[in-house]
Length: 256
Image 1 (cartoon, rainbow, N blue to C red):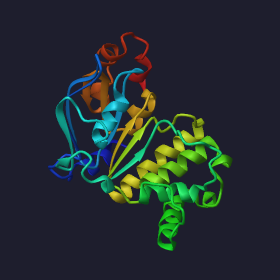
Image 2: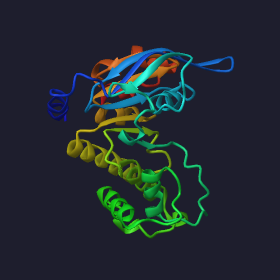
Image 3: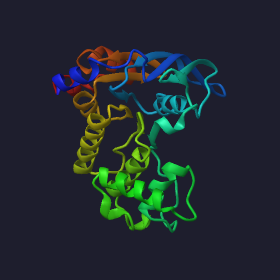
Image 4: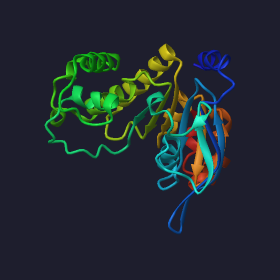
């Protein structure tokens, strides 16, 4: 694993995939992010960890251009965040649509091409959507109604939706929420295979410190402020985790 990481990052572009500079975000009187700065190298796998309410999802939305900071800025591949949505695939944390909505997994994937639900799927769109579903091992789900998908199957469909444009950056907000242990590990395997095949950059919000340590090249420890950013062996120390989480219940991450 370590040698694979070194090989992948040894020849990356000098322009970071994600550049965050002194980002501060306030919602009303609440400061959600304060003076957050980091550069994520192209081709890296980043895990963003921190307690509930730490600003992790807000940071992802800043990267997507959905939240504009009061101070600072974010850039993707040297361009302002939000300028080139086609270069980014996104898997949200909360699947807010009505599960009884009469649509299929293939139609969900097509929304990654159109950014809206299709009234009619064009043949070229269907071909790309089926290829994306096959890429995540879910080709058999194409005609399955969304209401009949398990948590793991729905997550695969969302991952196919994120990957249908073959993005250079994949942003995932708690992608393992609501899936079982085996589905979670399948998800990480799929991400790593896509990354190895495409050279894409992956940034994932997670509460799973073991997954962050094992799968990520870089870890960002966040609780409103940046409490640590670097390789897992350096950043996932008791000092950084205690600073972010406020207690000493994360020592298990050190022994993995």
